[in-house]
Image 1 (cartoon, rainbow, N blue to C red):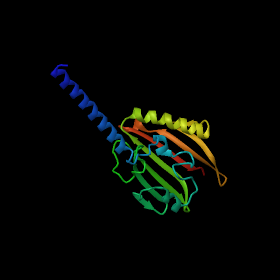
Image 2 (cartoon, rainbow, N blue to C red):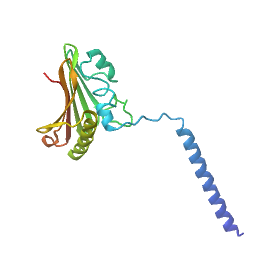
Image 3 (cartoon, rainbow, N blue to C red):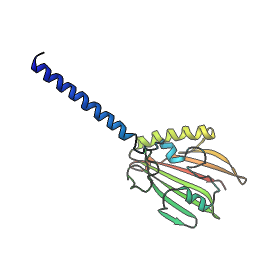
Image 4 (cartoon, one colour):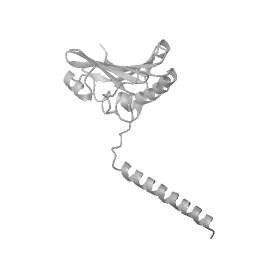
Length: 192
């Protein structure tokens, strides 16, 4: 073999060994890292389906509702608790991080005699097309969970169940047309 071919063979072998070592140690170190718990955007916004909304259900007491959120409320009154939350599906527990002003959501819990009687969630998205796509995903979720909804103007309503003889409902509306960005509004409430 010529000296030039031997040098080229050494370079190729050195590159192969280096690449193997980098890949091996990279994989080895990734096994020790804590991996995030990724969830869907629908699950972040409305929960996994075990409760009516996120970790709560209508008619829960104030203290129980506050204990379900992993963040101190942005606003709190005797009949009202408000949160601004990041739309982070990769790290859903990172609620104390800063909120991206283009993509985030707010949740307002409203109480009557210390019992949860209304939940208002506003979802803010960078574009109206992303709001329309998310609305379709939410419609699919609510329809599979509660059956076909009824249309009332720009709102779609689903009956959740009876609570203390009153009907609980959820309303979904796309309010993007009124804004320069995407905005969805979800309201869970007990009908009077």
